Length: 96
Length: 481
Ligand SMILES: [Zn+2]
Image (cartoon, rainbow over all chains, first blue to last red):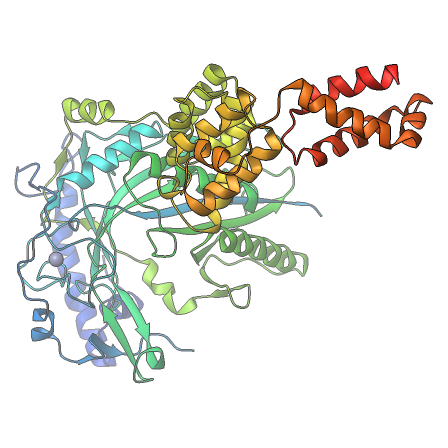
């Protein structure tokens, strides 16, 4: 299976990546070969195999509904690239 | 051409749990900005979300209440999209294997007929944060992010496209809200955003069975806006088709100030959510015992309560419907009944004065200055003929003002009804003596004048005479006059 350049551009948009024309061509080849490699799994007959949602055979990890403050009220700021007016500050996301 | 509207609703309800769905931060409303956050809900690298068991119990509870089948095996998925209200770059939700599938709820249409609206599914997910844009808070080129709401548990309830008008959509949402409140799983406060609704709307030629292309209308945070937004969208699609245009599948945002829906084309690519099972959250298995435990904790639900009110208290459907719309009002009614008053009379007072008082002052029934016991006593005073229904109105006003109990008010103000017929007789004689003209007219056949005579006696006794006794005496005396 070979991806088109359009496929690559779409994946890049979804991942918020900006690719040059050269990069698009380069990744088209690389992504296609990765998908072909994974595609070998399709050769197996999986009709009688339950779909796997997790690699671990663990079930039911819960916490009780208890509210607990584990971090200082201001600690959210410590990793924020930008803050303002007591909020995280980011580039404006909607136009008027 | 005539068209039929096809509407399905996706309702999000915030659960009133103590803590968030995947971390122990408070799920409460109104904290300082970003104070209710931790590495898990901030989406820091290496964090591990752990499921709040109570959220599952509440999902099961709602599912049982609306007759869904409860999935014994259920998984969480990542819904991927980039937006600053979602720090991880994905929302933890359920996609394949949601906690509940199927079920339905019944709405009562304006003509009194019932209609069952089927549900597709109910699933658990986390809420996103809140954004404030530009100069609404600070710099015009910035948006500001509050992540207190990120990770607050939500149930999303998806209906089948079985609603046919904005009115039906409103009734459906009201019914769902009533059930959620009865169950106590959510406080359903629409102003605070704990009940939100998106609508999938399409139109098709009347009689057709092929649905048209649908648009998803978002951002309707009140019953009024829900109806207006759907009505607008139906009109828009019909006009578009009549002009030879084509409805495109898209999300549209409702703008309440202008009463229009606006295309959100910028978000189109976001529809590719690339769901996949979240490796951080292990498979959820719900045992039969767990389901049974939850089933045993279910309260009496609105439909069952309505039927019981009609059967046990002989209330008309209308009364039973109004009283059971809110569990608190239904409880108020049953509390008041304990004083021994007649159910229908108590119901009338609740549907009239009590609901008016609590709506005007935005109170819960429990906060009403007139307690159920006070109302019950008032009704008993009418029934044992201590006061007339008219005087009861005065007592009600006084109770609302002073919070005193009705007996005290009646005694203090000297409102006890005159049932002693000799005292009433004196007044009746006086009225007959003083109004020979009216008496002659009455005897000449104008029998409706009896109302006027009763009015005069009531006036003379300042409303305290027993109207039954007045009526009887008047008829007797007028016949002899
Ligand atoms: Zn947290």
